Length: 584
Image 1 (tube, rainbow, N blue to C red):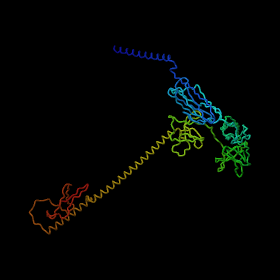
Image 2 (spheres, rainbow, N blue to C red; image 1 turned 90 degrees about the vertical axis):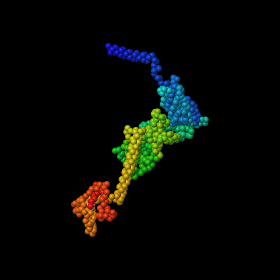
Image 3 (cartoon, rainbow, N blue to C red; image 1 turned 45 degrees about the vertical axis):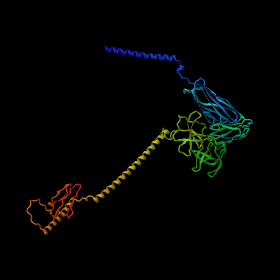
Image 4 (cartoon, helix red, strand yellow; image 1 turned 45 degrees about the horizontal axis):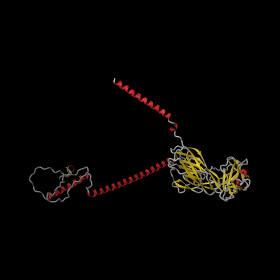
């Protein structure tokens, strides 16, 4: 009965807990529907990026104001912007929280606590008259809660550069040259459009232009990365007062290459390259030579022909014509009498903005701080390989044109830039840190083995010393024993013979004495123990003496008070046998 009551009570408590849980779930759902969604959802802040539009005179400095404002009144956190400008008109000088140059500026700002605005001032120098814009390439703006803000309004800065008083309006050229190729028609300051033909291997046209007025600037666009067919190269001359004039060069890149340069075959001189027969050109248009080469007369196989040699390159170029009349330049190796096609590989120039790495960036292992001198002037801090007196390259932290931040490798000799990869070349799947760990472990093992070898050598030396000392002590002890110790052991047979001989000598002396001095007769005495005949070796009786018994001395003279005239027989001991004395 009692158990039934307890079971009913437990069932009621279980039902009450289930009801409370269901009631809590229902109330939570009702609360979720009654609370406004704006309270539960955190909305990103909305901001505006604006600039000032200043006017400046050429040659002077100008300040451009950059301001980031919150449109919804929320507090701002920090921002990171990348700005672009025309380096031919403006030159970046300085700015709070800003760094850059060569057409790009990186701006990093941090708002004060609770502030809804961030502002900074950038200083530029006006190089020449004209109008240019400063635009935002990439932007990242965060609010006080570290949420990325939405940029609803994005502006730019228009900088107007006025010409100085008395500035020249001359925007003409004094000279214009290209390499390779020849301008058609010939250059004239009044002619603003030209054409030139280049071979299939030419990827860049070198343009040399000199303005009439020293204060004017010249800008060349489109001379790199030439494509097959027609390309356009613009040479823009801007006068000191801001006026400009453009010289246009139409560059035609054809499959024939040097054929357009008037190559002429040199009789029956032929070569075979990759199963294709070519004729050696006796002459060609020198202007079609690649950049960095000059024409000269060369004796090939006993015949003088026109060839090209590198001005700073140890290379020799010969012009070869195939069966279709197409002419190309080949590198000729005099030592091996062999040819290889002349090819150039070029890349489109890109700029990387140098940045200071923050705390989250780790400098690759094996580098130490260094200074890099830029070709156009100025210095940039970076890192060079540790331990190298004359490093060939250095690395720096920067941002590319797409806003990607990473380490870049700068070749100090060729002035080229490429991404820095920390993986060890030729070791797949092993990072630089892992490689350094392996090297460190290997070094530690070598050190342990060296220490173990030293310890083993030391123990061997100690053991050898102890062995030598033990040998010296044993020899010294043996010598002392031989000099002042007990006599050396003799064999048992030798001892018996010596004792027998001594007994016989003593008996002989006693017999002679009695003969000379006969003794008076004495009354009979009780029978005493018969003295054994010592002359018979086999009947010799041996008495065993303990170590503590005193040695018995034989008085052969019968005079007890007289000192012994003969040497007393002493006890001789052996490690295993006791000395036995005969009682005569």
